[in-house]
Image (cartoon, rainbow, N blue to C red; front, side):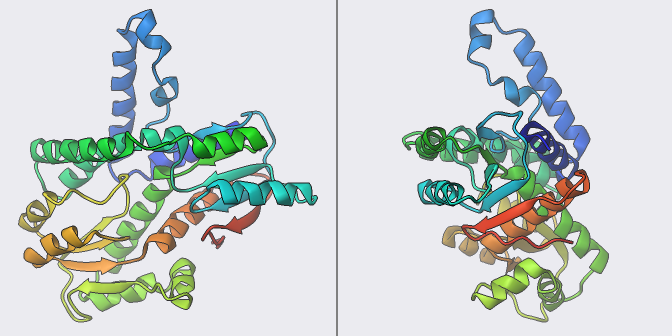
Length: 319
């Protein structure tokens, strides 16, 4: 399969699994196209053309020829200089590696990933908070993240990939959408009464089983085994954790339990203030689940299975 085809499948599957719904995502792309069409020729020269067909600024090909054939993929949750040097070493030792895929964004995908946070406005609105409120609080969060990214040297990993001539792609929100939608659907089907039932469900999946073995089991942070769940919100996508200002609104909207990858101490204190149950599923394990669901869909569209070289916390579990 060509690299370009892998990329297009990732984007499409990310859209299909988007918690906002495909129609919302397609409307966003249409809005971008209308904005682009009225720009001057000079303004168009610096416009991110890829964003007209790819709604996820943090998921893209960072470096490499889109027409290369891809069969062997080295995958890591984080890909930095050491992983790319490892890939180069393996390649020099006759190990075939056609592509390296990182989950967490680097390079241009990191410089612009704050824009993905905007999707949280619709996600929070779907859980009962008025859209006029979610847009305001999410907009403020986007500015905070943008300011934190601005001073950083974001081209380092891109430069290493370029110098070593190793194709590199980022799959962030396209994978996070998979785990968010998958777990929300599974929990809705389970219709649990108690928090213990949700933890037991998570522990059935191989990604979380592996996490248990290395000391990162899913756990209840606020509440206990027999706390009643109420309405459950799976918060696993949108670039960063929800804005602190959203938790009071979620409580008022009837959310009883939040399931997420991780939370800052400030967010935990705010959530506890409104008596919302918290289940921490785990960061790397949840990222693994999202990536594996994405790769499962990719392989279904391919005539052959890909070879995966696991590194940097990634483990391939097929379904």
